[in-house]
Length: 434
Image (cartoon, rainbow, N blue to C red; front, side, top):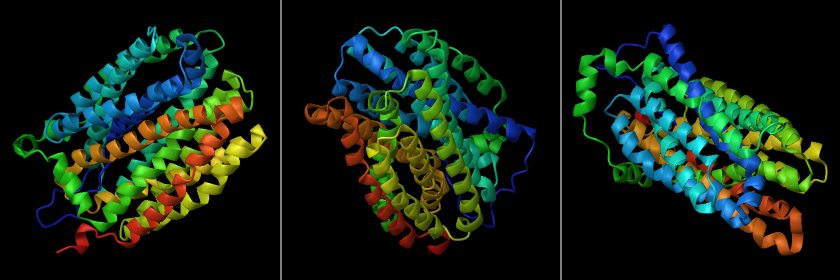
């Protein structure tokens, strides 16, 4: 996640001057964001094959896609983020990409539930480091009036990874099994990690005073970030939102491929193409629009971001129900586009709203805290709960058990929408505080 810096004061740094290095840095970090979700989404497309070969239940599959990944993602994120607040973020990102790419390849050689969990833990530990470091770095590379758009562009790149992972996996499934696909997708990430190490801009490398100040700065404990959030009414509502909305969002993403294959009888190739395209349309357009409107209306009035996010989430709810219950695969895809578009409108603005209310020195650690909420609620609870509910509904619904499972989870959108509106109403940007 990306932070929004405090308003510049008399001793603020000079305005950021954009050069080709800024845009090369952005391009490489967008590639990193996309790759992290390509690696994750490949698993969801092949999870029914993995289930069959490794003889898993839906509950075990939910643990693989959800809790095992999310717990270690959250645990690893904090020490890496605290180092990123003081150290060379370029190196953190490069090492993270190389580690998770190797872990993706290792998923292809897993031969049991436990060896697959170990590979997923390795994957989560690698991916946990890149996000906070990359977003902390981008805050310094781009000026304040472009940061909401940069946040949303990174989120859009993640959406490209989600859809691209499905499309690529579906295309490769014509010739290869799931084991070979993990190897094909994982190993090229090592090259991207080396490119990051060589070409990403790190402002601290070019400014001796900045390096000294960053290394000498006291690391922000996680408990201080949590205390800040709990002490701020608006951020308490944000915590509720981040605990609810990802449950629905990640349940749809992680179980969407199985839903279309089981309920609508789609092949892997068709699922990758059509569901991947639906994700691309909804998530990319939603993130870019959220960035543009957040920069235009939310920079001077951060409270706008809460209202904007909440309305989108409330509109998403009925379309989520339509997605789960319609008998038409085409209508389900259309509903999925609307759901993802409306849900995506919340994330960039809510991140901007949150970071407008905290000091600059909390950047990467606060980012890791937000990632923790999203990861534990989304991948952890959402991915696992969908599997558990699907298994619970199986005696009645059989192969269609994902219908009531995903419909039940969609109720979290209503709670999240109301929380977003309240976060906007109670926001206290730093410029309003004494």
